[in-house]
Length: 499
Ligand code: HEM
Image (cartoon, rainbow, N blue to C red; front, top):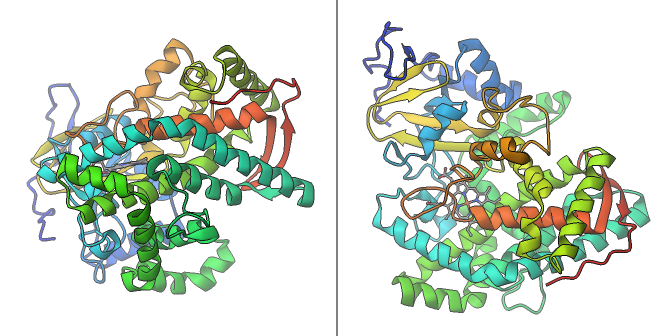
């Protein structure tokens, strides 16, 4: 708070050009009248326009991919300043990845920080700026955890997804259709936790097990941390009836930690009991406090990784299950050939699946699991879009909305079309750098000096593995929204061998 944005001395459409020849413009848009400006933006964001329209409408209105607006949540019950400058094209968006230009402390979920009790009282890694010493230590620890998960990834994904497929088929046989994410969400919690913690929270024999309710217990801890920014999609008549209640319940006050404390404590106990070796390593190798390591490990495993997978995995099934039969047959043929050529579904086989990789990049492009990115200008900046340059004052908050930046027509042809072959070939490979889901380019590498997601390669691998597993078993999926309507098993009789 206390940012005097309106008094910033920004020249009005001065006829100045930057060194790259772009005209220097004032950032368009305004924050409106005190309180009312923010209030109307909030109602439009949650209830009238929703996302992505809220962003796209203002982009059209201001004829600019960079503009000012009020974001959510808002005061008085959230201690935040809602005024932001939005970045919606590929060029300006990359400012958010440059940690010399933007401060990334305490902006992980947006302009607000959930109660620290959700993370054991610690400011965990995603909330730290790389200039903080702890960032380096905790990110190195995270890299080590991911490295040691390496051997488990392929077999655990296979084991968990095999169970998912059986559940899908049983559901289809019984009811003629099945909500694919019910089994998928359980499968992803298993494969993710087995890979990263070497323990399954749903297994009744695991110490401090969470049992069959593991997904809902973990979601109860995740959701209150992000719900203040959630747009709830309801039919219009329900919106009118329910909006005031929903608004009051979930968008007006931070959800108190006390409501989920007991569930949070169960997850903590599960990690404490099952990750002893990893926590020993954190203490010995990285000099970390055991509790701090535990809360970081838990957050990475269940909030970052599984939370993200809960968006990514269903998006993959929905998108691919809606492609043509011809494309799906081609995908299945590629998967089966790579498995046969490489003696199993192993890393070499996965690397020989360009169509799978392209399709996964396209899902990341159309449905980035984390849509928002924030960063506060560390100094006075000139930010360039494709058509203009904008002067931004030190301390102003920058807010990226990735679903629009990922549809930048200057970079992607037919950006609104889901084209799973988009990233194929030499031309397609050149587009991979514009896939930004990991808070950085897909062609770049997370390090202790940047804020790119350390799980970038892990997640890319298990996303590719989902497609490989599905299309080694099925030739065609037919999907209607969140429902799987039919599957056609592969008919060639070719049985892939597994690692
Ligand atoms: C950071 C996305 C999986 C650990 C981030 C950020 C994004 C992201 C967008 C940057 C947030 C920001 O500062 O603006 C995702 C998605 C995932 C995923 C969509 C799954 C689909 C993982 C996994 C791990 C992980 C598997 C580790 C096991 C982290 C950490 C950070 C981070 C520790 C902070 C990095 C830093 O401070 O330098 N992730 N992530 N994430 N992610 Fe991921």
